[in-house]
Image (tube, rainbow, N blue to C red; front, side):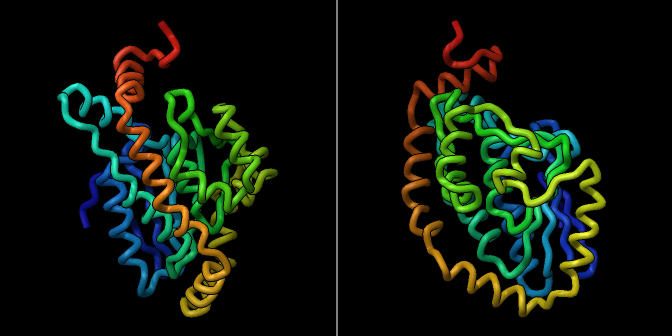
Length: 254
């Protein structure tokens, strides 16, 4: 298929999905969510491993502020339905395949959601992770249920409040990354060699069991989606994003 926001290739039972919006820092828009969901649907029957990647410089920087700016500039009401994105991350968690995020470069905001929802996270030594939302009067409502599941409440709380990035080594200590190395490509190859022999049926049964142990992600969905909708309906928040895109000024700057 001809995708506009991602690159996709298949090697036997492995799917490689690469974010391809580098001119927009691999930010998340509706089409990227839709195309990622389409690929995961194709993977359900026979693919055992899905590898998620960005560019060497940027994995994913979260919400597309350019799109928000365009809506505000046109006078349109800012529609921000985060149901599809939350459902996509639920597919990461619940789907009958192993999701590996191979993280290089910067990861911010919603990009952390992709990482947190993954089964395995391999980070390059140069990777950085951050949640910058509070700088704009937002908070990572949809990311947090997945992030808390992976690293715990207090670490997710601290990362959200501080808004500054952590490096790959710190991410590994906290559990956000499972492994990190200056040779992340080599690490990825080693993981794929180890995982390829696993059966599709075994992976499917195992993930079903693991997800049956807790339904917190599904329980928290309505709360997360509603919080996101409320934040992106706030005119002051939208004005702050608009000015940041226009002038590069943060909301607190004159």
